[in-house]
Image (cartoon, rainbow, N blue to C red; front, side, top):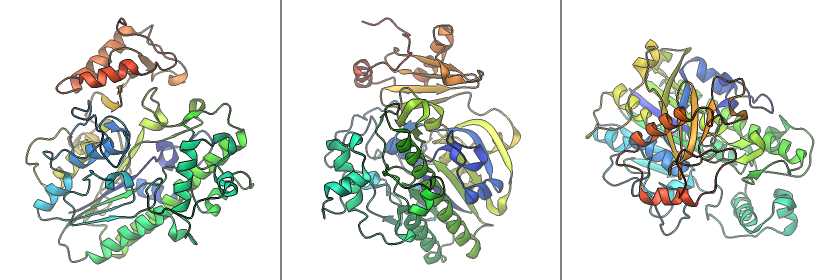
Length: 467
């Protein structure tokens, strides 16, 4: 059996048609929907750790990253992205290394530039790794610089500051030579992945990882994709302010949502191209394809634009996860078992009959999903100095120093309308106890100190007395 793992960065679950629609309206994803019809769809999948690099560590190793032991990285050539924002530990074998050692030909096609920065090693174990450059602040080019008029086109004056101007300067410099749809990032990644399949037809079996940074911001899409959702022309808006949106002109918020929707549909179209390549090459009957995202993105949800671990919410933490088995076995099946990113490695290793050289934390959920049996009783997700714990009834979010707790009742009509931690303090304590139990080796002192310096989220409540 061959295995393909496809990861779209910042793809909201509610923007994949099988899961419904975002608050601003339906997003067109005919190819994602067709894939869902042929797949086992997991409806309650969560990350293990966030954001970008901690997520990939869990995906690529099957190991828990939370609570970020030895994860206070300050490495040359990169910013301090978050706790755990660093390379894969040398003593942790990657899925690619395990499958390579078992005789698989391995490939990585990616434009997630964080994985390829100095000191990073996410290409370990791949016979071929192809880095498609130019996303976000990747220093692919140093000129020509944008004029003030060009800056004003891409970045509204009310959002301009040193950081945002530097960001847009690099983003637009990197794409000066785009002339057609195929030049955009998602098409390039998925076309290159399709080419890898064509060029490696002699491989008796293979493991291919496809990493598309789209639909991550900046939401730079061909205009015809944006016009699918917003026809009127006007001020462009392609990035997050990571701030409250109540002061953002409504027209700019609509433009942002349209650009994001267009980016998702662009990804969908070229994912369809990639799946067609599998059909043409006769690979659909002997290949498992796993489709997921690292996290979503708030675009006006709860009057916020961006992504964050505190307070956490569904549009960021709920992730799509679908598995198309060879020959579309189990097509049309769905499961509400709670699963996490590190379980994907367990699924792959079980499917190909490869034992890891040492135990991993992830477990295959396929048998439980198909039988309707319980799998995980809860999910614990780490992000910075905050942790989120979700079970059948509750959504807990708080700081690892036992303060700043938020608790949402998932049985309520609008679960995230208000925190109910004061009325359900014992439930919050029980959920935090699960977070402590999942923190193998205990929560590091440096992370607790970081939590103490972090501001409280709105509406939080103490679980422990403050010093």
